[in-house]
Length: 474
Image 1 (cartoon, rainbow, N blue to C red):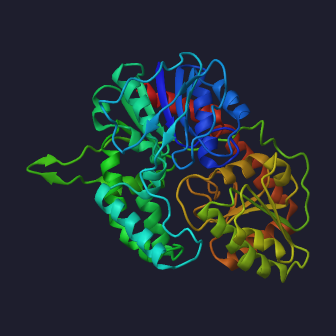
Image 2 (cartoon, rainbow, N blue to C red; image 1 turned 90 degrees about the vertical axis):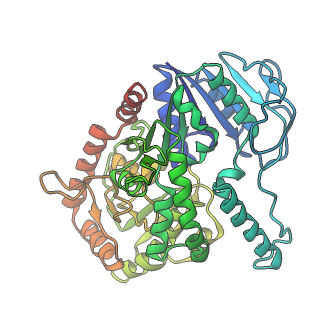
Image 3 (cartoon, one colour; image 1 turned 60 degrees about the horizontal axis):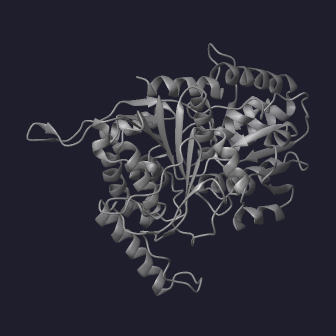
């Protein structure tokens, strides 16, 4: 089977964030059983060595320049085909000249000048709240209103990647097309569904996430999100209708989408859009990267891990540092917190100045830090979907205290099954749950062993990859 995978996020190394981890592990599984053709975009921090390493994982790899970054010199000299030329416009140009060969069996590097669909920020002085910034916001909202597609999707759009994908599908060179994250839906044309299986692996609903942030008061810009909410609903309905199947990571994600898509509006007795089947395929863990701990370190040490430039993680890190930890330190003055994760933004770096908090940024092996902590806290207040960070802590054997959002999709609360984590949503609930783990070695061991067992039986990438493979051959 020939599978075309589209990912505007460069998925290697699989340690940059949840999207990269999920995309890489799924393509790695599928590549062992099928011919996978991957189209992706090179972000500024991607090296030639990483491109070469990713090439080894797939039958064909096409790497496109970031549409928001000026063109660079050729990525690799010699064998790869370099696609040169001026790329502009939002829709593919059917009169465009033919492109060079795709470089079968290897790596295709597409080089050229691409103009972003959205203009650069108008306010170049870096000041906040000026007239230019207001005009820029109005311009982005107007684009969303008129085009029906969110600015973040349009700004990452590569016309060269569109032309390349069009050519592959038109020529019948693939049996299935997958979009690894909803932002890649822009490349899939509605008529493709009549020719090939098209799958949107969306992770979670953009409409549902925006609605949740407004409902919980965690939105950074409530006015913007209130204006965007109906537009996101319209957008998600439209793009879902293009696909043969939709994949979400939890039953909560699935229920949100069904709420949005069903019942479909009927016009003159007919549905005005197609409602595809929605499947649930969770995330997994690479157990070689997250081995089970050899000892219980004890003590009063906490850890939170995740990409520290991601809004839900930033909110969780600040909630943990500014509200939960101080309350806990009233009982345990020596309690410490380690924040682990790439690209910490200034508001996260500033937390390192507080008593007992260390911000370490990107690390080679997160598991080593998990093994050193008595408790992993996952106080997520924003975002749907199963959390890699929760599964990874469970795999490492570090007892977990987490919110409803942090435990979404996981059966952890006991009943007929052993407890696998403790649940908390309010500050006092976190303090009590963490205290019970600090004080009770047997409870820590119970959670550690049962959580690892759950991951081994249900959440390895081999198990998850098998589910994805079956869906693509349905």
